[in-house]
Length: 181
Image (cartoon, rainbow, N blue to C red; front, top):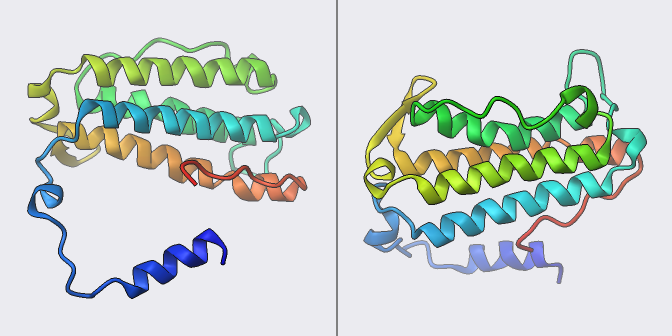
């Protein structure tokens, strides 16, 4: 049975009365920093795998007018992480991770951009104080407890990376298997 089908079968077989432990359900309980850093690293590895899967000729591919190219999608997936944290925690984001005219057209430069962005993201997760991560922070009309902005940034990266699957398929490239599967 494929893993996905097995996972669905296990979810369906779970008792409907199963409860999430109170500690895990709390939106204020900060996960251990090591887990947040593992998630940042897993996100980085996923983005890099997608860049590796794409042929160089695909970086400028756009499925239609008015939408991002593949490289611009990757740039958005990786670059928005620190933008979200900087905005939520009212800090100045880094000036640049490189020349977009170059990294949008060169796979090696695009991977360097991704790594610089994720290095900064990981540093921010390591350096934010517990008080900062456990206090409310506002961004884009939404207020969340600080550490949840890390989760939101990771969710955004995953969502944006998922948008590149049709780009790959349209160019006859099989998308890489998503980590942690």
